[in-house]
Amino acid sequence: MANELKKKYGLLTAICMVVGIVVGSGVFFKAEAILTKTGGNLKIGILAWIIGGIIMVISAYTFSILATKYEKVNGVVDYAEATIGEKYGYVIGWFLSTIYYPTLTMALAWLSARYTLVVFQGDNADPTSGMCFVLTGFYLVASYALNTLSPIISGKFQVSTTFIKLVPLLLMGVIGTIYGIANDNGVLVQNFTTVVNEVPASEAIFSAVCATVFAYEGWIIATSINAELKDGKKNLPKALVIGSLIIVAIYVLYYVGLAGAIPNADMMAGGQAAARNAFGTVFGKAMGTGIFVFVIVSCLGTLNGLMLGCTRGIYSIASRGRGPAPHVFGYLDKHTNMPGNSSILALLLCAAWLVYFYFANLNSSTAGALKMFAFDPTELPIVTIYPFYIPIFVMMFKDKNLSPVKRFVVPSLAILGCLVMVVAAFVAHLKEIPGYLIIFAVIMAIGMAFMKKKKVA
Image 1 (cartoon, rainbow, N blue to C red):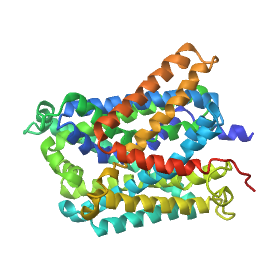
Image 2 (spheres, one colour; image 1 turned 45 degrees about the vertical axis):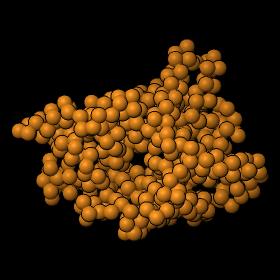
Image 3 (cartoon, one colour; image 1 turned 90 degrees about the vertical axis):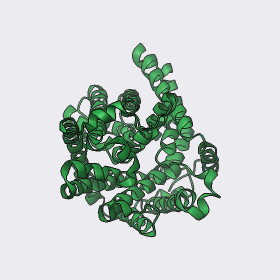
Image 4 (tube, rainbow, N blue to C red; image 1 turned 180 degrees about the horizontal axis):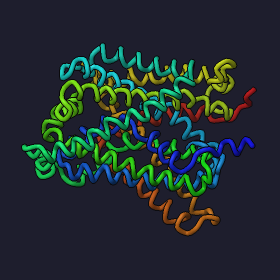
């Protein structure tokens, strides 16, 4: 009977859940970045969105095959354990807990603060100012408190922002495109036919594809809805593929809508206020600012979701008897049923990465000395997870219960997608990678010291 209660979602609901989980603030943040990386070449930018989307679709479908095979398995750590073993699951879990989630959570808090200041200060908003980082800290603590002290409210906030985040995307995508076509100045046609700065095609494509990972990330979380789907073996692959295609369509539509609002050169030169200026052009200053507030709410919703994963990261390791002090970080609060100690550590890790990000990337007096160790926290940590997927996909070759297509063709395409992401990272961040890998190696080495399994009382 308990199992029947879990099977409560149909295909349509599942598709909506996939879209809600993946769509977030990344598209608002990366649209301008992709335009810059391609030198204002709109067609290459659209191609990059499509390639990144295809990699997401293939990867999501591949994991859906695993999800239907290991029906009770939930999350990439569990897939790693089921296919390769507990130690490999621990390695991925440690990376997610100490690098992946904290860096992305910190970045989303900072991005939310940046956009908040843009609303009040416009072009004068300074992303390196003390005000910006005070606000970033406030958003981190507020998100932590919401997830740790009131998980029910946190869940309702997450559901609400799922719908809110689609509003600015669809409005700009549809109305911005119409505005660009109907505008006497022919902005949309001009943006499609002119290039601001010539960038070699291969460099432009790979750099832009790398930038899309932040906007598309979250699809792996969507595989965890399998346990609650009716006829999950059929509906999960459909939901992931259809949902992913809808996401790609929404992102491309929004990207074209921006191009219908203002010239590419203005979008590239507009910096952090570029998106707000585009909304103001299409909808008028007052209404444009109002709609842009929805962008901030979307960012906060994504931050809330990341903090949710972040607070449970170390707990996930500790509950398996591994990691530092599993008896401490595997503790659940009796009143809230939340991993309180793990949550506190997660908040401290986010704060530590925020301090590091400021001094290595933004502070002019220290960034020079730490230049070798500065990296983009919205791209490299995400790309790093793709090589971790490859051994999981390789293990599918050994599964004789799968059809030839699912056993060989699908995982091969998924592996190819992972390799494309790795190449894209090298093209886009070649100078950053050595320093990042040193930091990665040190943190992972610390984790290996705590790999031995212990008994948890």
